[in-house]
Figure 1 (cartoon, helix red, strand yellow):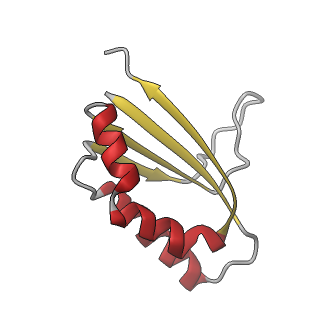
Figure 2: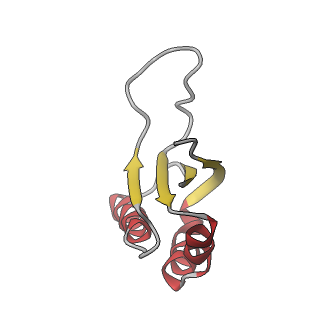
Length: 101
């Protein structure tokens, strides 16, 4: 399994409608056919020096393999999300990992 983790830093001062639009866009990504697992969240209330709480939202999607990931990257839903919602964030950081079973 390949895990694709994306951290988003949203622009300050977004309206409730813009946040709703962003969250709906994230949900659309978890419905892409090659996604086997999808998680959307915000930083938890955990507080330890090693935990980064600086991001606004996290998306984690799992794929069976690299081919599923590559399909996700090229599918119109993903491209539409970027086109519609990139104006809402200041930074994106991605971490991809192969699961060790």
